[in-house]
Amino acid sequence: MYYVGKYFLTTNHNNERMGSMDVEEERLLDERIKEYGITMLYDKKEGKHISMISIIGEIEGHDISPATSKTTKYEHLLPQLALVEHNPKIKGLLVINNTSGGDVSAGLALAEMIASISKPSVSLVIGDSHSIGVPLAVATDYSFISPTGTMIIHPVRMGGMVIGVRQTFDYFKIIQDRISGFVAEHSQVKKEEFEEMMVRQGLLTKDLGTILVGEEAVKAGVINEVGGIHSAIEKLKSMIIK
Image 1 (cartoon, helix red, strand yellow):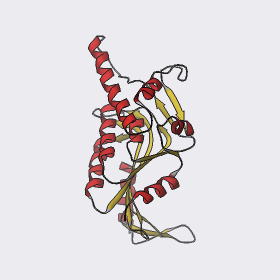
Image 2 (tube, one colour):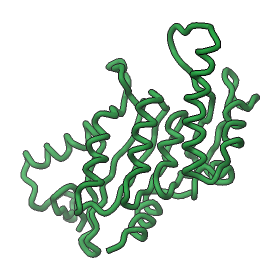
Image 3 (cartoon, one colour):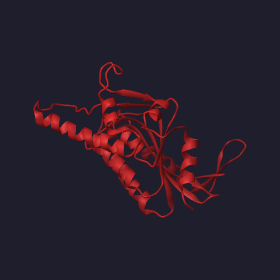
Image 4 (tube, one colour):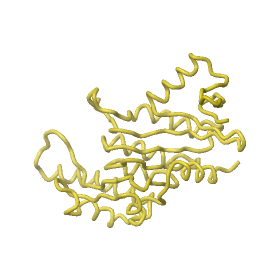
């Protein structure tokens, strides 16, 4: 027996879902997962509620992304993160990352919210956690990356027209310092080492930066451990005080 949201579920020999869900309730639960990538995991034996959120696709900020893009809208996740902190029944937070990056302001806002939660938190990088996804991956108390998961660390970029004056580059430097400072504070990598990875040449054919795959992210001090969903959930459960 397992538990998702507020419903107990079981499986019969034909792998059909059974339990207290009616058709409408199941539809609403599936819609919540589909629309927001958010659900609640519950260990009945140990009595632990875990909120799970997923950060996938492009992180959408103040501008709306094209309808063809798969996005994570930060205005959906900020209230959920506040709920994790406020709700006494929620004992821990699990963050699943598979993102190509996106809006720096929105990404840092989410990372700061995750880092400020007083309850135990664990992140898992599966697929990718590129660009502003790096601060999001290290914002939790402990982090995992799958063996083939990748992280791309590169300088701050801005789309559209920019003014070619010194103030523009000074502003870029401020943003970059915010990112590198946050990553250094919430991981084992030093700020100078992270900034060096940002501007490293040779790995990316059309850009500066560094690609870290699985164990490389751990050796660099960015991520704590290589593992999958089982390792992430077990680690989080061990961090939760009954």
